[in-house]
Length: 83
Ligand code: SF4
View 1 (cartoon, rainbow, N blue to C red):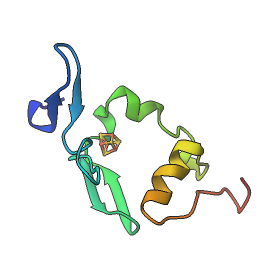
View 2 (view 1 turned 60 degrees about the vertical axis):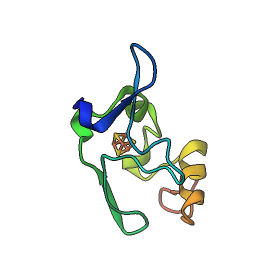
View 3 (view 1 turned 30 degrees about the vertical axis):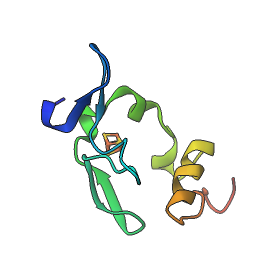
Protein backbone atom coordinates (compact mmCIF):
# COMPACT_ATOMS: atom_id res chain seq x y z
CA UNK A 1 0.00 0.00 0.00
CA UNK A 2 1.55 3.33 -0.98
CA UNK A 3 2.25 5.51 2.08
CA UNK A 4 0.58 8.46 0.35
CA UNK A 5 -2.79 6.68 0.56
CA UNK A 6 -2.64 5.89 4.27
CA UNK A 7 -2.40 7.50 7.69
CA UNK A 8 -0.84 5.75 10.68
CA UNK A 9 -3.30 4.40 13.22
CA UNK A 10 -0.92 2.50 15.49
CA UNK A 11 2.70 1.42 15.21
CA UNK A 12 1.61 -1.50 13.02
CA UNK A 13 -1.73 -0.40 11.54
CA UNK A 14 -2.70 2.25 9.02
CA UNK A 15 -6.04 3.45 7.71
CA UNK A 16 -6.94 4.71 4.28
CA UNK A 17 -6.81 8.50 4.00
CA UNK A 18 -10.28 9.98 3.91
CA UNK A 19 -12.02 7.19 5.80
CA UNK A 20 -11.98 9.26 8.99
CA UNK A 21 -13.28 12.44 7.33
CA UNK A 22 -16.83 13.71 7.67
CA UNK A 23 -18.38 12.54 5.47
CA UNK A 24 -15.93 9.67 4.95
CA UNK A 25 -14.54 9.08 1.49
CA UNK A 26 -11.60 6.80 0.92
CA UNK A 27 -8.85 8.43 -1.12
CA UNK A 28 -8.80 5.37 -3.38
CA UNK A 29 -12.47 5.68 -4.36
CA UNK A 30 -12.80 6.92 -7.94
CA UNK A 31 -15.97 8.26 -9.49
CA UNK A 32 -19.23 9.79 -8.28
CA UNK A 33 -21.26 8.02 -5.60
CA UNK A 34 -24.69 7.09 -6.91
CA UNK A 35 -23.53 7.27 -10.52
CA UNK A 36 -20.46 5.06 -10.97
CA UNK A 37 -17.61 4.38 -8.56
CA UNK A 38 -14.74 1.94 -8.33
CA UNK A 39 -11.79 1.21 -6.12
CA UNK A 40 -8.64 2.48 -7.82
CA UNK A 41 -6.52 -0.06 -5.93
CA UNK A 42 -8.98 -2.96 -6.07
CA UNK A 43 -6.39 -5.71 -6.55
CA UNK A 44 -4.37 -4.41 -3.58
CA UNK A 45 -7.28 -3.26 -1.38
CA UNK A 46 -6.88 -3.77 2.40
CA UNK A 47 -8.23 -6.81 4.25
CA UNK A 48 -11.31 -5.09 5.72
CA UNK A 49 -12.32 -4.03 2.21
CA UNK A 50 -11.97 -7.62 1.00
CA UNK A 51 -14.24 -8.81 3.81
CA UNK A 52 -16.90 -6.12 3.30
CA UNK A 53 -20.11 -7.16 1.50
CA UNK A 54 -18.50 -10.13 -0.28
CA UNK A 55 -21.52 -10.75 -2.53
CA UNK A 56 -22.02 -7.14 -3.61
CA UNK A 57 -20.37 -7.82 -7.03
CA UNK A 58 -23.20 -10.33 -7.58
CA UNK A 59 -25.80 -7.71 -6.69
CA UNK A 60 -26.38 -9.14 -3.20
CA UNK A 61 -25.86 -6.71 -0.35
CA UNK A 62 -25.81 -7.20 3.41
CA UNK A 63 -26.67 -5.07 6.44
CA UNK A 64 -23.39 -3.11 6.42
CA UNK A 65 -23.69 -2.55 2.68
CA UNK A 66 -27.29 -1.38 3.10
CA UNK A 67 -26.29 1.07 5.86
CA UNK A 68 -23.49 2.50 3.71
CA UNK A 69 -25.83 2.88 0.73
CA UNK A 70 -28.54 4.52 2.89
CA UNK A 71 -26.03 7.17 4.04
CA UNK A 72 -25.81 8.24 0.39
CA UNK A 73 -29.54 8.04 -0.31
CA UNK A 74 -29.22 4.78 -2.24
CA UNK A 75 -31.59 1.82 -1.95
CA UNK A 76 -30.34 -1.61 -0.81
CA UNK A 77 -28.88 -3.97 -3.39
CA UNK A 78 -31.23 -6.73 -4.44
CA UNK A 79 -30.65 -9.67 -6.75
CA UNK A 80 -33.56 -9.92 -9.17
CA UNK A 81 -35.57 -7.83 -6.73
CA UNK A 82 -35.24 -10.44 -3.93
CA UNK A 83 -33.42 -9.89 -0.62
S1 SF4 B 1 -12.48 -0.86 -1.39
FE1 SF4 B 1 -10.98 0.61 -2.19
S2 SF4 B 1 -12.09 2.57 -2.30
FE2 SF4 B 1 -13.28 1.20 -0.95
S3 SF4 B 1 -12.55 1.68 1.12
FE3 SF4 B 1 -11.33 -0.05 0.36
S4 SF4 B 1 -9.50 0.87 -0.55
FE4 SF4 B 1 -11.01 2.48 -0.31
